[in-house]
Image (cartoon, rainbow, N blue to C red; front, side):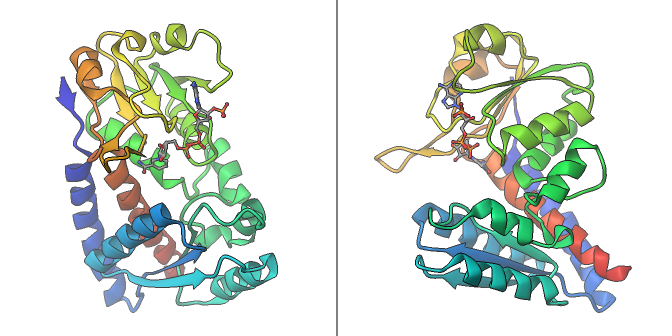
Length: 281
Ligand code: NDP
């Protein structure tokens, strides 16, 4: 069994991006990411801090906009509008979740597609489904990078994704399809889940339930990608895959932590750098 080391791979990607940032700076372009957070979700605060650290390490400018929970939709949209027009800002990221009285889809629609480094604006979602150049959302993008770097054959493989969220499952389906995999997507209403997952050459778990995927659901020699981040009451991080038993059967597997998580942040940085390149045109 080969361990897919997302932490190491993410570090290499960040090192290469650092050089690219320096090159952009030498041309007078200072890449900059703006992050909007509404309310005080604790998990979001941790994710935002990690994004800010990654920006610092790469020399990418970073500005945080912390809005109070009671923020109105108009206030949120007018901030996005202001950031869209700011020529010094390359990427705009709206950290989810946002309070329930706000419409996150309307907010994503407002973000200028060329600054939409999370790839959630419908223009980028549509372009991905048409296999056109676009911002690919960071988690699926990171998963594809891991598979490619570890030489996991995608073309012709049967990839099974458990989870159909807009941020992981659906864009990942498109990414894998664009790479010529045969893709099956499962969700909570899927019947005989185990029968489906056992057919997977590449099995991706994005469910949000600790250790949900057990060895009996996995084909011998499958590549298993664990997207899940679940914190136990004791504060331990667990993935969606029962690592120790599944790793006995898998040909390669990602750990949690140290797998998909660091790759998501590295690909966000890659998207910010891509956005900064638009200033060259
Ligand atoms: P969502 O809650 O949005 O989606 C979960 C998906 O799992 C849904 O499609 C749901 O089905 C499906 N599901 C739930 N229960 C079952 C079941 N019993 N059998 C089959 N399918 C089931 O989660 P996210 O996609 O946002 O996140 C998934 C996990 O990935 C979480 O742990 C999250 O923290 C983590 N994550 C990690 C990231 C990283 O960078 N490592 C980035 C983003 C997320 P249905 O649609 O029918 O409800």
